Each structure stands twice: as C-alpha cells, then as structure tokens.
View 1 (tube, helix red, strand yellow):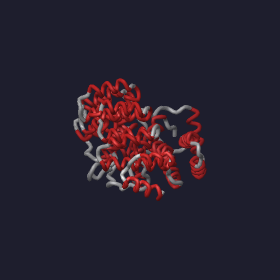
View 2: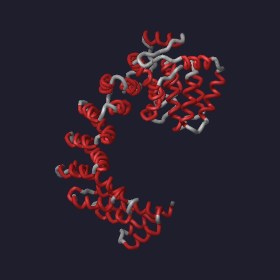
View 3: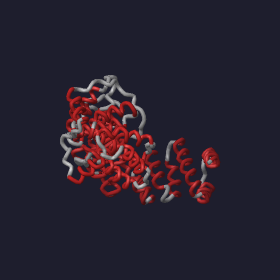
View 4: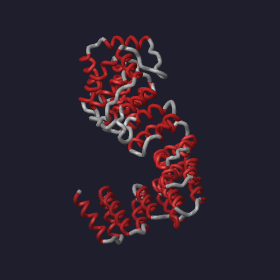
Length: 419
C-alpha cells in the first residue's frame, strides 16, 4: 500500500502522545460493529482501499513497486523487516520500512507486526512501531484494532490505530470507539479518536474532549489535541483555552500549553496569565517569564516591576532570576537584592540551582538567604554532594572556611562516602 505523509506523521506523533507501554490491553466488552463498519471491513478484505479525504492517488512507480512486492513470499517480507529493524541508523530504518510497507497488502500486516513485536520493542523503535500500526490502520482498521485488543496492553497500539482511522474517517472511528466501550468509566479509546480528528476538525475534537469525564484518559486526549491547537498560533490557543468552561480541563490546558505558547509569544502569554489568575496560571508564570527574560530581560523585568506585590510578582521574578543566574550569577543576585521583598525561599533555590555550574561559590553563599532552616540545610546538602563529586578540592576548601551546621556536614560526608 502507498502510505501518504499524514499517516507517517500520525505514527510519529503517536510516540509523543501515547506513552511507552506495549503488551496486552485489558479490553472492554467487545461490542458489535455497526452495519457501516461491517461494510468497511468487507470492502477491505475484498482488496478495496479504505480512504476518505487524504487518501490520494498512487503514481505508476509506486503502484508497480507495491504490486511486485506483494508477490513476495511472507517469509521474505518478514526477513526484510527483521533486517531493517536490526539497523542502527534511524533514517535508513525509516526509509527502508516505508518501502517495505508499500509492498504489504492488508492481510500481511498482522504477521509483520507480530514479528516486529517479537523482536522486542525498545524506546528508540517506537517510531517504527507507530508507522506499522498507522499503515495497517489505513489498510484495514478493524483487523488492526482487533489485533490490538487481543495482543497488546496500555493503549498505545489501539490509540495509534484509532488516531489514523479517525483522521481518515472520523464517523467510523467514533462509532467503533463507542461500540467497543462497556460503559464503565471513561472510554479508553476516545483519546486516539480525538487526536485523529483534531488535525482536521478542532471544533468536533473539542466537543468530544469536553464530553469526557475528568480522568487520565481525558488528559491523554488533551495532550493529543495540543499540537493541533498550538499550530493555530498563540492567540488562537489562548482563546481556545479561555473558552473551556470546565475548570479542571481549563487548568490542565493552561499547565500543558502555556510553556509552548511562551516559546512563540512570551509577552502575550505572560500578560494573559496575569489577567487570568488561577492556581495553574500562577504555577506557569515562572516558566513563561523565564522564556521572556531569555529573549528580552529588560521587558520582562519592566513587567515584573508593574505587577502588584504577591504570588504573581514572586513567581514572575523567579523566572527572571532563573534564566539570568545561568548566564550572570552576579547580575541575578543584583535583581534579587532589588526585589528583596518579593524573594521567597523558592526564588533562592531557583537561583542556587541555576547559578551553581557557573559560579558555585556565589551559589553556595546565597543559600544562607533561605529562611526555612530545614529547606536551607537540605539545599546545602544537595549542593555540597554534587560539588564534592565534581570538584572535591574546591568544595572542601569552601566547607573549611564557612560555618555549617554539624549535621549538614555529617550527612554530606556519610552520603558521599557511601557512593
């Protein structure tokens, strides 16, 4: 079969969104396929191509390669697949696997996928696994899903297959997901369906997402939608999040998407978070201001200065201090001195963590600013352990010239001695 670019992309995206779990799925009640789905299955098994929008036409060269390849014995196809997967160059593997996929008929995929899984699926082979599943979904989605239900677990395979099918035929994929869910708890198949639909119909995908109950599956569906929402631009993404009425879902979207929006538009994202205060927006202010200060420190500091005293200002300051400390530890200390009333223990810990590689002496000296004794001692211990492992002479010299609580020194020496 001829695999078009959207299918390949869907396979690669599934790696990021699906997680790394492969094995046997705890399958819901099987349910019966609708008449339309039965018709689709019959057409596939009669050799017809199951495509809607995006199916495209194959050229003469591709058709010739496909037809000649299909005449190869299955044993040879399996040998080729194994040889491909034993290669070390990922680009060469992908090219060779795509060529092999073009030579597979709908009835070939089960044996090829089974053999692929028998070789052992490692993290750096998930891309190829997704390509095979996506190609099978395009050729015969019902057989692919039946195989996934019987032989895999964790949802990775079924989600990848459903995402590809839903991209080509949303109605059929949605019907299958609903028919194969036993109604107990959140539907485990919806994340894949929503991810596949989101590329071409964000509004429908959003409605389906909103209809899901608060659950891990809804989080997976949100993660699958992110790339499609974000590609519309930061302003459209912010509007999409703001329009979500479900508070938990909206907060989850803020947590997951703010950093990516800030990479494109840090100022707009920062201003949006400030105007829409919530637990999630406050948690993300430091990351957003860190990205903003990395591009324009003066503008980010001016914004911090304009904020009223409180959690928002402290969190924003933490982001500016963090990015500055990694480049200019002394300059970051000057910022902390300028905003002493807004510096809490978390800001100091961020400074120490980011400044340490650049100037460990300055970083160690700043730990004394941590007000909570327990946090201060734990920060001393973590910093000294790393320093002793990386540069023991300088760490010992600093320890001998600075008064530290005896228990801190004892704990550090005991742990370093055990390693």
